[in-house]
Length: 189
Image 1 (cartoon, helix red, strand yellow):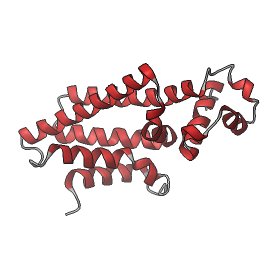
Image 2 (image 1 turned 120 degrees about the vertical axis):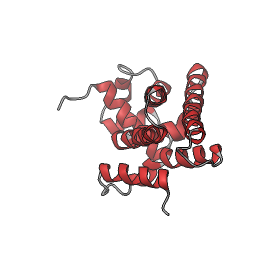
Image 3 (image 1 turned 30 degrees about the vertical axis):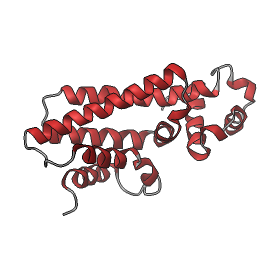
């Protein structure tokens, strides 16, 4: 396994601390202490705590955006597209739940252009998902229910998966994916 570079280590440690304490409560000194280095050493790799937050949140938001754009443009059925959206959320949760927690809980601490960019990506993501749902309703693949309720129910569940899965890691990833797809697409009845 390739060792991670110092900047990546700082980002990973910071994401964990932000998840545990919240962005506002974490200091650069806390990050340095968690890494067992001097706070001044952090500044050889990172300019500020704000830069760390941007690197964490924007990277994941860009991944969500690029993948949903691919999904939307694909020739797959609506059901297959929704399955891929569910898998995307699960994959990111399993790979980096700390960073996902930052994205969900700390995005409002972004500033200026980074905040505008994030909000635009989030709105575009939701609009892409809305288009998938509208298409599925229009072609009869999914029930004609209120689109906003479908979007809220699905995305709320997926966006907060990291809260629940962190406590239930005994569920195998492939079982989690299969069951989440089944429950979100078909319900429990």
